[in-house]
Length: 189
Picture 1 (cartoon, one colour):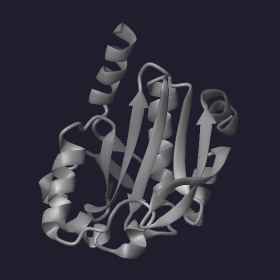
Picture 2: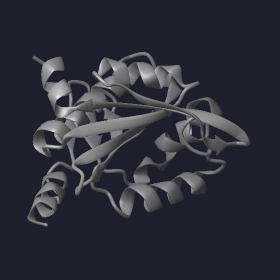
Picture 3: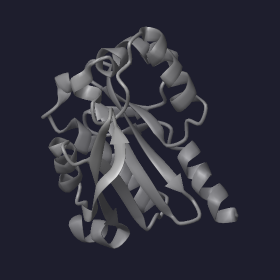
Picture 4: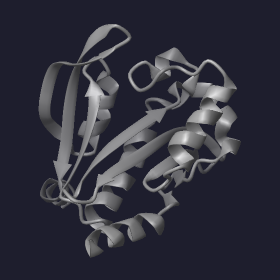
């Protein structure tokens, strides 16, 4: 149990993380408009979550998902403009020392390396600071760009599961990629 408290303590002391171009920081209700800009866009959300119909949907999502249990959950803010362009989270299973990474980025900022930059920072947090043994991420096989982001960070395919779940009436093939602490160290040596 002591190990779990230490990991939560580390997460609690890392509520703000920086990269060269990004600030990963707690979400607040002040982020509603920036988040709604992409959460109301079907192209951005189609593989991640149900598209928001109203600002109230976004405000509720921020309050219920990001603010109730904030550890490991971050808004992705561009340092240069202080604009929220997405979110990223590291859901840690303390007992198994494994985490799952999830993210979404406003489509207006795709193709600039922001997602990989944010992922790399959370991989450092998870594999080096929290001393996790593995971090994984799942994506809908049709979301090729998400798979490419994972590859840029050193993740490799663990599994491809046809008919893993249903979304909007369609069967989804889910791909899981991951990177172990050992693979991370080799990737960065």
